[in-house]
Length: 478
Ligand SMILES: *[C@@H]1O[C@H](CO)[C@@H](O)[C@H](O)[C@H]1NC(C)=O
Ligand SMILES: *[C@@H]1O[C@H](CO)[C@@H](O)[C@H](O)[C@H]1NC(C)=O
Ligand SMILES: *[C@@H]1O[C@H](CO)[C@@H](O)[C@H](O)[C@H]1NC(C)=O
Ligand SMILES: *[C@@H]1O[C@H](CO)[C@@H](O)[C@H](O)[C@H]1NC(C)=O
Image 1 (cartoon, rainbow, N blue to C red):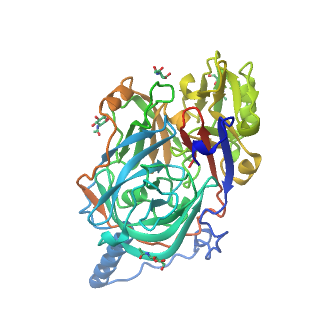
Image 2 (image 1 turned 90 degrees about the vertical axis):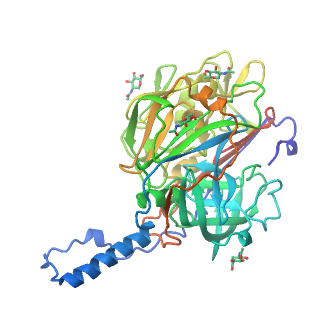
Image 3 (image 1 turned 60 degrees about the vertical axis):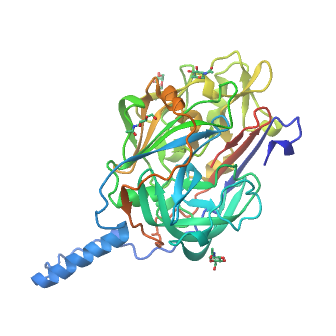
Protein backbone atom coordinates (compact mmCIF):
# COMPACT_ATOMS: atom_id res chain seq x y z
CA UNK A 1 0.00 0.00 0.00
CA UNK A 2 1.51 3.26 -1.01
CA UNK A 3 1.33 6.54 0.64
CA UNK A 4 -0.43 8.37 -2.15
CA UNK A 5 -3.43 6.11 -1.63
CA UNK A 6 -3.96 7.57 1.80
CA UNK A 7 -5.92 10.63 2.80
CA UNK A 8 -3.58 13.39 3.90
CA UNK A 9 -4.89 13.32 7.43
CA UNK A 10 -3.79 9.75 7.82
CA UNK A 11 -0.28 10.42 8.83
CA UNK A 12 0.11 6.85 9.76
CA UNK A 13 -1.85 3.82 8.98
CA UNK A 14 -1.51 0.64 10.88
CA UNK A 15 -2.64 -2.83 10.26
CA UNK A 16 -2.09 -5.55 12.75
CA UNK A 17 -3.27 -8.97 11.98
CA UNK A 18 -2.59 -12.51 12.81
CA UNK A 19 -1.68 -14.93 10.15
CA UNK A 20 -2.93 -18.37 10.73
CA UNK A 21 -2.05 -19.63 7.33
CA UNK A 22 1.48 -20.46 8.20
CA UNK A 23 1.83 -23.72 6.49
CA UNK A 24 1.02 -25.77 9.47
CA UNK A 25 -1.93 -27.81 8.30
CA UNK A 26 -3.26 -28.23 11.79
CA UNK A 27 -1.74 -30.46 14.39
CA UNK A 28 -0.12 -33.37 12.70
CA UNK A 29 -0.81 -36.82 13.87
CA UNK A 30 2.24 -37.98 15.61
CA UNK A 31 3.80 -41.25 14.72
CA UNK A 32 4.35 -43.51 17.68
CA UNK A 33 6.42 -41.44 20.00
CA UNK A 34 9.60 -43.41 20.11
CA UNK A 35 11.40 -41.03 22.37
CA UNK A 36 8.99 -41.74 25.18
CA UNK A 37 9.29 -45.48 25.00
CA UNK A 38 12.80 -46.48 25.69
CA UNK A 39 13.22 -50.23 25.38
CA UNK A 40 14.03 -51.70 28.75
CA UNK A 41 15.64 -54.86 27.50
CA UNK A 42 19.16 -54.51 26.31
CA UNK A 43 19.69 -56.33 23.11
CA UNK A 44 22.90 -58.08 22.35
CA UNK A 45 24.98 -56.05 19.93
CA UNK A 46 24.31 -57.16 16.37
CA UNK A 47 26.85 -59.61 15.08
CA UNK A 48 28.14 -58.28 11.82
CA UNK A 49 30.90 -59.52 9.62
CA UNK A 50 33.56 -57.11 8.40
CA UNK A 51 31.78 -56.95 5.06
CA UNK A 52 28.45 -56.25 6.69
CA UNK A 53 30.01 -53.55 8.80
CA UNK A 54 31.47 -52.05 5.66
CA UNK A 55 28.08 -52.01 3.95
CA UNK A 56 26.42 -50.59 7.02
CA UNK A 57 29.03 -47.89 7.35
CA UNK A 58 28.70 -46.93 3.71
CA UNK A 59 24.92 -46.77 3.99
CA UNK A 60 25.13 -44.60 7.06
CA UNK A 61 27.48 -42.25 5.29
CA UNK A 62 25.26 -42.08 2.22
CA UNK A 63 22.23 -41.52 4.38
CA UNK A 64 23.85 -38.65 6.20
CA UNK A 65 25.20 -37.17 3.01
CA UNK A 66 21.79 -37.32 1.41
CA UNK A 67 20.27 -35.73 4.46
CA UNK A 68 22.83 -33.07 5.09
CA UNK A 69 24.16 -32.34 1.71
CA UNK A 70 27.24 -34.11 1.11
CA UNK A 71 30.67 -35.21 1.58
CA UNK A 72 32.95 -32.63 2.91
CA UNK A 73 34.32 -31.38 -0.26
CA UNK A 74 32.44 -28.78 1.70
CA UNK A 75 35.29 -27.23 3.50
CA UNK A 76 34.03 -25.01 6.20
CA UNK A 77 34.14 -21.28 5.79
CA UNK A 78 32.46 -17.99 6.51
CA UNK A 79 31.31 -15.13 4.37
CA UNK A 80 29.67 -11.77 4.48
CA UNK A 81 26.81 -10.10 2.71
CA UNK A 82 26.53 -6.31 2.69
CA UNK A 83 23.05 -5.02 3.46
CA UNK A 84 20.92 -2.15 2.22
CA UNK A 85 18.89 -0.02 4.64
CA UNK A 86 15.57 0.69 2.93
CA UNK A 87 13.38 3.71 3.76
CA UNK A 88 15.08 5.01 6.90
CA UNK A 89 15.45 1.74 8.83
CA UNK A 90 12.13 0.25 7.68
CA UNK A 91 13.78 -2.88 6.34
CA UNK A 92 17.16 -4.37 5.63
CA UNK A 93 17.91 -6.49 2.61
CA UNK A 94 20.83 -8.46 1.29
CA UNK A 95 21.39 -10.35 -1.93
CA UNK A 96 21.37 -13.95 -3.02
CA UNK A 97 21.86 -15.62 -6.38
CA UNK A 98 19.53 -18.26 -7.77
CA UNK A 99 19.83 -20.68 -10.66
CA UNK A 100 22.30 -21.79 -13.30
CA UNK A 101 23.69 -19.49 -14.51
CA UNK A 102 23.23 -17.59 -11.23
CA UNK A 103 21.25 -14.36 -11.20
CA UNK A 104 21.27 -11.99 -8.20
CA UNK A 105 18.16 -10.85 -6.32
CA UNK A 106 17.59 -8.59 -3.34
CA UNK A 107 15.85 -10.30 -0.43
CA UNK A 108 14.77 -9.15 3.02
CA UNK A 109 16.75 -11.10 5.63
CA UNK A 110 14.19 -12.18 8.19
CA UNK A 111 15.03 -14.09 11.36
CA UNK A 112 11.28 -14.13 12.14
CA UNK A 113 10.28 -16.54 9.37
CA UNK A 114 11.81 -19.54 7.68
CA UNK A 115 10.80 -19.68 4.02
CA UNK A 116 12.65 -18.42 0.97
CA UNK A 117 10.56 -16.93 -1.80
CA UNK A 118 11.08 -14.69 -4.81
CA UNK A 119 8.80 -13.11 -7.36
CA UNK A 120 8.78 -15.05 -10.61
CA UNK A 121 8.45 -13.90 -14.17
CA UNK A 122 4.81 -14.90 -14.51
CA UNK A 123 3.91 -12.35 -11.85
CA UNK A 124 1.46 -9.87 -13.27
CA UNK A 125 0.20 -7.80 -10.36
CA UNK A 126 1.89 -5.86 -7.60
CA UNK A 127 5.38 -6.58 -8.79
CA UNK A 128 5.99 -3.57 -11.02
CA UNK A 129 9.62 -2.61 -11.22
CA UNK A 130 10.66 -5.76 -9.42
CA UNK A 131 13.29 -8.04 -10.78
CA UNK A 132 11.76 -11.48 -11.18
CA UNK A 133 13.11 -15.01 -11.44
CA UNK A 134 12.48 -16.77 -14.75
CA UNK A 135 12.55 -20.55 -14.17
CA UNK A 136 13.04 -21.23 -17.88
CA UNK A 137 16.46 -19.61 -17.79
CA UNK A 138 17.84 -21.85 -15.05
CA UNK A 139 19.06 -25.31 -16.05
CA UNK A 140 18.99 -26.49 -12.44
CA UNK A 141 15.40 -25.40 -11.66
CA UNK A 142 13.13 -28.27 -10.59
CA UNK A 143 9.43 -27.70 -10.21
CA UNK A 144 8.10 -29.46 -7.11
CA UNK A 145 4.58 -28.71 -8.39
CA UNK A 146 3.38 -28.06 -4.86
CA UNK A 147 1.52 -24.86 -4.13
CA UNK A 148 3.00 -22.40 -1.67
CA UNK A 149 1.25 -19.59 0.07
CA UNK A 150 2.10 -17.36 2.96
CA UNK A 151 -0.14 -14.83 4.63
CA UNK A 152 1.33 -11.80 6.30
CA UNK A 153 -1.97 -10.20 7.24
CA UNK A 154 -0.93 -7.01 5.57
CA UNK A 155 -0.24 -9.03 2.51
CA UNK A 156 0.23 -12.41 1.02
CA UNK A 157 2.40 -14.19 -1.50
CA UNK A 158 1.63 -17.39 -3.31
CA UNK A 159 3.20 -19.54 -5.95
CA UNK A 160 4.84 -22.91 -6.39
CA UNK A 161 7.62 -24.72 -4.57
CA UNK A 162 10.78 -25.55 -6.47
CA UNK A 163 14.38 -26.44 -5.87
CA UNK A 164 17.33 -24.68 -7.40
CA UNK A 165 20.89 -23.67 -6.66
CA UNK A 166 21.01 -20.79 -4.18
CA UNK A 167 24.16 -18.86 -3.33
CA UNK A 168 24.93 -16.30 -0.69
CA UNK A 169 28.08 -14.95 0.96
CA UNK A 170 30.32 -17.52 -0.74
CA UNK A 171 28.09 -20.45 0.19
CA UNK A 172 25.98 -22.57 -2.09
CA UNK A 173 23.13 -24.99 -1.47
CA UNK A 174 22.56 -27.04 -4.60
CA UNK A 175 19.01 -28.16 -3.92
CA UNK A 176 17.48 -25.37 -1.90
CA UNK A 177 13.72 -25.37 -1.64
CA UNK A 178 12.29 -21.99 -2.55
CA UNK A 179 8.92 -20.68 -3.57
CA UNK A 180 8.55 -18.86 -6.85
CA UNK A 181 5.64 -16.50 -6.37
CA UNK A 182 3.43 -14.92 -8.99
CA UNK A 183 0.70 -13.50 -6.82
CA UNK A 184 1.17 -10.75 -4.27
CA UNK A 185 -1.12 -8.43 -2.45
CA UNK A 186 -0.52 -4.75 -2.94
CA UNK A 187 2.38 -3.39 -0.95
CA UNK A 188 4.09 -6.61 0.03
CA UNK A 189 7.00 -6.07 -2.32
CA UNK A 190 8.84 -2.79 -2.42
CA UNK A 191 11.32 -2.50 -5.28
CA UNK A 192 14.18 -3.26 -5.56
CA UNK A 193 13.36 -6.15 -3.21
CA UNK A 194 12.37 -9.35 -5.05
CA UNK A 195 11.64 -11.61 -2.13
CA UNK A 196 12.51 -12.75 1.33
CA UNK A 197 14.92 -15.18 2.92
CA UNK A 198 13.72 -16.61 6.22
CA UNK A 199 16.48 -17.23 8.75
CA UNK A 200 14.34 -18.93 11.39
CA UNK A 201 14.36 -22.65 12.05
CA UNK A 202 12.87 -25.34 9.86
CA UNK A 203 9.99 -25.94 12.28
CA UNK A 204 8.77 -22.43 11.47
CA UNK A 205 8.84 -22.97 7.72
CA UNK A 206 5.52 -22.91 5.86
CA UNK A 207 6.83 -25.32 3.27
CA UNK A 208 8.39 -27.56 5.89
CA UNK A 209 11.73 -27.40 4.11
CA UNK A 210 15.15 -26.70 5.56
CA UNK A 211 16.12 -23.02 5.42
CA UNK A 212 19.30 -22.09 3.52
CA UNK A 213 21.30 -21.27 6.65
CA UNK A 214 20.22 -24.49 8.37
CA UNK A 215 21.35 -26.61 5.40
CA UNK A 216 24.78 -25.03 5.75
CA UNK A 217 24.80 -25.61 9.50
CA UNK A 218 23.67 -29.23 9.22
CA UNK A 219 26.06 -29.78 6.32
CA UNK A 220 28.86 -28.72 8.64
CA UNK A 221 29.82 -25.96 6.22
CA UNK A 222 30.07 -23.07 8.67
CA UNK A 223 33.31 -22.23 10.49
CA UNK A 224 31.17 -21.33 13.48
CA UNK A 225 27.51 -22.42 13.73
CA UNK A 226 26.10 -18.90 13.67
CA UNK A 227 24.98 -15.84 11.72
CA UNK A 228 25.50 -12.27 12.79
CA UNK A 229 24.02 -8.86 12.00
CA UNK A 230 25.11 -5.30 12.23
CA UNK A 231 22.29 -2.93 11.17
CA UNK A 232 22.79 0.78 10.45
CA UNK A 233 20.68 3.72 11.70
CA UNK A 234 19.26 6.43 9.45
CA UNK A 235 15.91 7.08 11.16
CA UNK A 236 17.21 10.33 12.69
CA UNK A 237 19.20 11.42 9.68
CA UNK A 238 18.53 14.29 7.34
CA UNK A 239 18.20 13.87 3.58
CA UNK A 240 18.01 10.12 3.91
CA UNK A 241 17.80 8.31 0.58
CA UNK A 242 15.43 5.38 -0.05
CA UNK A 243 18.47 3.15 -0.01
CA UNK A 244 21.41 3.63 2.31
CA UNK A 245 24.21 1.31 3.43
CA UNK A 246 22.47 -1.19 5.70
CA UNK A 247 25.17 -3.01 7.57
CA UNK A 248 26.75 -6.42 7.43
CA UNK A 249 25.34 -9.94 7.61
CA UNK A 250 28.02 -12.54 8.34
CA UNK A 251 27.46 -16.28 7.96
CA UNK A 252 29.69 -18.69 9.83
CA UNK A 253 31.60 -16.07 11.82
CA UNK A 254 31.29 -12.81 13.65
CA UNK A 255 33.03 -9.71 12.33
CA UNK A 256 35.21 -8.55 15.19
CA UNK A 257 35.73 -5.11 13.67
CA UNK A 258 32.05 -4.35 14.24
CA UNK A 259 31.77 -5.01 18.00
CA UNK A 260 33.80 -4.80 21.17
CA UNK A 261 33.98 -7.03 24.23
CA UNK A 262 32.26 -10.36 24.69
CA UNK A 263 29.11 -11.62 23.04
CA UNK A 264 26.54 -12.21 25.78
CA UNK A 265 24.73 -15.38 24.67
CA UNK A 266 21.40 -16.44 26.15
CA UNK A 267 19.79 -19.79 25.43
CA UNK A 268 16.79 -19.68 23.11
CA UNK A 269 13.52 -21.11 24.39
CA UNK A 270 12.46 -22.75 21.15
CA UNK A 271 13.97 -23.62 17.84
CA UNK A 272 11.27 -22.10 15.64
CA UNK A 273 11.49 -18.36 16.05
CA UNK A 274 14.72 -17.17 17.67
CA UNK A 275 13.19 -16.49 21.08
CA UNK A 276 14.57 -15.17 24.34
CA UNK A 277 12.78 -14.40 27.57
CA UNK A 278 12.64 -10.70 28.31
CA UNK A 279 13.71 -10.44 31.94
CA UNK A 280 14.00 -6.70 32.53
CA UNK A 281 12.64 -3.59 30.87
CA UNK A 282 13.59 -0.13 32.13
CA UNK A 283 12.48 3.34 31.06
CA UNK A 284 14.82 6.12 32.13
CA UNK A 285 16.15 3.65 34.73
CA UNK A 286 12.71 2.79 36.16
CA UNK A 287 11.76 -0.87 35.90
CA UNK A 288 8.54 -1.90 34.21
CA UNK A 289 7.06 -4.93 35.96
CA UNK A 290 7.05 -7.97 33.74
CA UNK A 291 4.86 -11.02 34.35
CA UNK A 292 6.58 -13.05 37.02
CA UNK A 293 7.82 -16.54 36.53
CA UNK A 294 9.52 -17.96 33.56
CA UNK A 295 7.64 -19.44 30.66
CA UNK A 296 6.06 -17.86 27.68
CA UNK A 297 4.67 -14.75 29.38
CA UNK A 298 7.66 -12.68 28.34
CA UNK A 299 8.87 -14.70 25.42
CA UNK A 300 10.33 -12.45 22.74
CA UNK A 301 11.03 -13.26 19.09
CA UNK A 302 14.26 -11.59 18.00
CA UNK A 303 13.27 -10.55 14.51
CA UNK A 304 15.41 -8.69 11.97
CA UNK A 305 12.40 -8.59 9.62
CA UNK A 306 10.37 -6.44 12.02
CA UNK A 307 10.90 -2.70 12.09
CA UNK A 308 9.69 -1.89 15.61
CA UNK A 309 9.15 -3.53 18.99
CA UNK A 310 5.72 -4.95 19.87
CA UNK A 311 4.67 -6.17 23.30
CA UNK A 312 1.68 -6.98 25.52
CA UNK A 313 -0.72 -4.07 26.08
CA UNK A 314 -0.20 -4.04 29.87
CA UNK A 315 3.57 -3.72 29.66
CA UNK A 316 3.51 -1.22 26.80
CA UNK A 317 1.08 0.88 28.81
CA UNK A 318 3.32 0.60 31.89
CA UNK A 319 6.29 1.64 29.79
CA UNK A 320 4.63 4.83 28.56
CA UNK A 321 3.30 5.51 32.08
CA UNK A 322 6.93 6.28 32.90
CA UNK A 323 6.97 9.06 30.28
CA UNK A 324 5.09 12.15 31.52
CA UNK A 325 2.71 13.53 28.91
CA UNK A 326 2.47 10.33 26.91
CA UNK A 327 -0.92 9.21 25.61
CA UNK A 328 -2.34 6.23 23.74
CA UNK A 329 -2.87 6.88 20.06
CA UNK A 330 -6.33 6.77 18.55
CA UNK A 331 -7.69 6.01 15.11
CA UNK A 332 -4.86 5.00 12.88
CA UNK A 333 -2.48 5.32 15.79
CA UNK A 334 -4.32 2.80 17.89
CA UNK A 335 -1.86 0.52 19.63
CA UNK A 336 0.77 3.26 19.51
CA UNK A 337 1.59 6.03 21.99
CA UNK A 338 2.58 9.63 21.56
CA UNK A 339 4.86 11.50 23.93
CA UNK A 340 6.42 14.98 24.19
CA UNK A 341 9.39 15.25 21.85
CA UNK A 342 11.13 17.27 24.55
CA UNK A 343 11.46 14.06 26.60
CA UNK A 344 14.53 11.97 26.01
CA UNK A 345 13.43 8.36 26.37
CA UNK A 346 16.01 5.77 27.30
CA UNK A 347 14.61 2.26 27.19
CA UNK A 348 16.77 -0.75 28.00
CA UNK A 349 16.04 -4.43 27.61
CA UNK A 350 17.62 -7.40 29.29
CA UNK A 351 17.21 -11.06 28.41
CA UNK A 352 18.74 -12.64 31.47
CA UNK A 353 22.18 -11.23 30.96
CA UNK A 354 23.36 -7.70 30.62
CA UNK A 355 21.07 -4.79 29.87
CA UNK A 356 21.03 -3.24 26.36
CA UNK A 357 20.05 0.38 25.78
CA UNK A 358 17.98 1.58 22.88
CA UNK A 359 19.04 5.01 21.72
CA UNK A 360 16.39 7.73 22.15
CA UNK A 361 16.78 8.27 18.39
CA UNK A 362 15.45 4.79 17.74
CA UNK A 363 12.69 5.01 20.33
CA UNK A 364 11.46 8.13 18.53
CA UNK A 365 9.78 6.61 15.51
CA UNK A 366 8.79 9.94 14.05
CA UNK A 367 7.79 13.46 14.98
CA UNK A 368 4.06 14.05 14.39
CA UNK A 369 3.94 17.76 15.19
CA UNK A 370 6.15 20.45 16.71
CA UNK A 371 5.89 18.88 20.13
CA UNK A 372 4.45 15.41 19.68
CA UNK A 373 6.48 12.31 18.90
CA UNK A 374 5.43 8.74 18.17
CA UNK A 375 7.13 5.92 20.09
CA UNK A 376 8.61 2.84 18.46
CA UNK A 377 7.12 0.42 21.00
CA UNK A 378 3.56 -0.65 20.18
CA UNK A 379 0.91 -2.99 21.58
CA UNK A 380 0.38 -6.38 20.09
CA UNK A 381 -3.34 -7.02 20.28
CA UNK A 382 -4.55 -9.40 22.95
CA UNK A 383 -5.66 -11.87 20.31
CA UNK A 384 -2.15 -11.87 18.99
CA UNK A 385 -0.69 -12.30 22.42
CA UNK A 386 -3.02 -15.08 23.41
CA UNK A 387 -2.81 -16.94 20.15
CA UNK A 388 0.87 -16.52 19.61
CA UNK A 389 3.62 -18.38 21.35
CA UNK A 390 5.49 -15.11 21.70
CA UNK A 391 4.48 -12.04 23.70
CA UNK A 392 7.09 -9.68 22.33
CA UNK A 393 8.49 -9.09 18.88
CA UNK A 394 11.84 -7.39 19.16
CA UNK A 395 12.76 -5.84 15.84
CA UNK A 396 15.20 -3.36 14.37
CA UNK A 397 14.35 -0.51 16.78
CA UNK A 398 16.32 -2.63 19.26
CA UNK A 399 18.67 -4.54 16.96
CA UNK A 400 20.28 -1.38 15.53
CA UNK A 401 21.75 -0.82 19.00
CA UNK A 402 23.68 -4.07 19.29
CA UNK A 403 25.71 -6.56 17.31
CA UNK A 404 23.39 -9.58 17.21
CA UNK A 405 24.39 -13.19 16.79
CA UNK A 406 22.03 -16.09 16.03
CA UNK A 407 23.84 -19.25 17.06
CA UNK A 408 22.56 -22.70 16.14
CA UNK A 409 24.63 -24.72 18.58
CA UNK A 410 24.18 -24.32 21.44
CA UNK A 411 20.95 -22.69 20.28
CA UNK A 412 21.16 -19.14 21.53
CA UNK A 413 21.05 -15.49 20.63
CA UNK A 414 23.87 -13.21 21.68
CA UNK A 415 24.37 -9.47 21.75
CA UNK A 416 27.53 -7.41 21.93
CA UNK A 417 28.40 -3.72 22.15
CA UNK A 418 28.83 -2.10 18.75
CA UNK A 419 32.22 -0.75 17.77
CA UNK A 420 32.18 3.03 17.90
CA UNK A 421 33.06 3.32 14.22
CA UNK A 422 30.74 0.57 12.98
CA UNK A 423 28.37 2.91 11.16
CA UNK A 424 31.05 5.16 9.68
CA UNK A 425 33.04 2.21 8.35
CA UNK A 426 29.98 0.68 6.71
CA UNK A 427 28.66 3.96 5.35
CA UNK A 428 32.05 4.76 3.83
CA UNK A 429 31.71 1.70 1.64
CA UNK A 430 28.48 3.05 0.10
CA UNK A 431 25.26 1.28 -0.86
CA UNK A 432 26.16 -2.24 -1.98
CA UNK A 433 24.91 -3.66 -5.24
CA UNK A 434 23.96 -7.31 -5.57
CA UNK A 435 26.99 -9.21 -6.70
CA UNK A 436 27.53 -12.83 -7.55
CA UNK A 437 30.70 -13.76 -5.77
CA UNK A 438 32.60 -16.97 -6.09
CA UNK A 439 31.42 -19.99 -4.14
CA UNK A 440 33.92 -21.33 -1.68
CA UNK A 441 31.73 -23.82 0.16
CA UNK A 442 28.91 -25.91 -1.19
CA UNK A 443 26.42 -28.38 0.23
CA UNK A 444 23.81 -30.39 -1.63
CA UNK A 445 20.85 -29.49 0.52
CA UNK A 446 17.94 -31.72 1.18
CA UNK A 447 15.57 -30.87 -1.59
CA UNK A 448 12.08 -31.50 -0.31
CA UNK A 449 11.84 -33.15 3.07
CA UNK A 450 8.80 -34.12 4.98
CA UNK A 451 8.92 -32.36 8.27
CA UNK A 452 8.62 -34.07 11.53
CA UNK A 453 5.91 -33.73 14.11
CA UNK A 454 7.78 -30.88 15.73
CA UNK A 455 6.10 -28.43 13.40
CA UNK A 456 4.16 -26.02 15.58
CA UNK A 457 0.49 -26.58 15.02
CA UNK A 458 -0.50 -22.96 14.86
CA UNK A 459 2.17 -20.34 15.02
CA UNK A 460 0.54 -17.06 14.27
CA UNK A 461 2.51 -14.58 12.30
CA UNK A 462 2.23 -11.03 13.39
CA UNK A 463 2.52 -8.38 10.79
CA UNK A 464 2.36 -4.66 11.07
CA UNK A 465 2.56 -2.43 8.09
CA UNK A 466 3.07 1.15 9.05
CA UNK A 467 3.05 3.87 6.50
CA UNK A 468 4.40 7.26 7.31
CA UNK A 469 2.95 10.03 5.26
CA UNK A 470 5.74 12.36 6.19
CA UNK A 471 8.71 10.34 5.22
CA UNK A 472 6.93 8.15 2.70
CA UNK A 473 8.70 5.31 4.35
CA UNK A 474 7.30 1.85 4.55
CA UNK A 475 7.80 -0.01 7.76
CA UNK A 476 7.39 -3.71 7.62
CA UNK A 477 6.97 -6.32 10.23
CA UNK A 478 7.63 -9.57 8.50
C1 LIG B 1 5.23 -25.69 -11.81
O1 LIG B 1 4.18 -26.59 -11.52
C2 LIG B 1 2.93 -25.98 -11.31
C3 LIG B 1 1.94 -27.04 -10.87
O2 LIG B 1 1.97 -28.11 -11.76
C4 LIG B 1 2.50 -25.24 -12.57
O3 LIG B 1 1.26 -24.59 -12.36
C5 LIG B 1 3.56 -24.21 -12.91
O4 LIG B 1 3.25 -23.57 -14.14
C6 LIG B 1 4.93 -24.86 -13.03
N1 LIG B 1 5.90 -23.80 -13.19
C7 LIG B 1 6.85 -23.85 -14.11
C8 LIG B 1 7.76 -22.67 -14.19
O5 LIG B 1 7.01 -24.79 -14.85
C1 LIG C 1 21.30 9.63 15.32
O1 LIG C 1 21.31 8.93 16.55
C2 LIG C 1 22.56 8.36 16.93
C3 LIG C 1 22.34 7.58 18.19
O2 LIG C 1 21.72 8.34 19.17
C4 LIG C 1 23.60 9.46 17.06
O3 LIG C 1 24.86 8.89 17.41
C5 LIG C 1 23.71 10.20 15.76
O4 LIG C 1 24.62 11.26 15.89
C6 LIG C 1 22.34 10.73 15.33
N1 LIG C 1 22.45 11.29 14.00
C7 LIG C 1 22.00 12.51 13.69
C8 LIG C 1 22.17 12.93 12.28
O5 LIG C 1 21.48 13.22 14.52
C1 LIG D 1 16.22 -4.23 36.23
O1 LIG D 1 17.10 -3.16 36.00
C2 LIG D 1 17.10 -2.18 37.02
C3 LIG D 1 17.96 -1.03 36.54
O2 LIG D 1 19.21 -1.48 36.12
C4 LIG D 1 17.60 -2.82 38.29
O3 LIG D 1 17.57 -1.87 39.34
C5 LIG D 1 16.71 -3.99 38.64
O4 LIG D 1 17.23 -4.66 39.76
C6 LIG D 1 16.61 -4.96 37.49
N1 LIG D 1 15.61 -5.95 37.78
C7 LIG D 1 15.83 -7.23 37.61
C8 LIG D 1 14.67 -8.14 37.88
O5 LIG D 1 16.89 -7.68 37.18
C1 LIG E 1 34.02 -6.70 8.70
O1 LIG E 1 33.22 -5.56 8.40
C2 LIG E 1 33.97 -4.51 7.81
C3 LIG E 1 33.06 -3.32 7.73
O2 LIG E 1 32.04 -3.54 6.81
C4 LIG E 1 34.49 -4.97 6.46
O3 LIG E 1 35.22 -3.95 5.85
C5 LIG E 1 35.35 -6.21 6.64
O4 LIG E 1 35.73 -6.71 5.39
C6 LIG E 1 34.62 -7.27 7.42
N1 LIG E 1 35.53 -8.33 7.76
C7 LIG E 1 35.33 -9.58 7.42
C8 LIG E 1 36.37 -10.55 7.85
O5 LIG E 1 34.34 -9.93 6.79
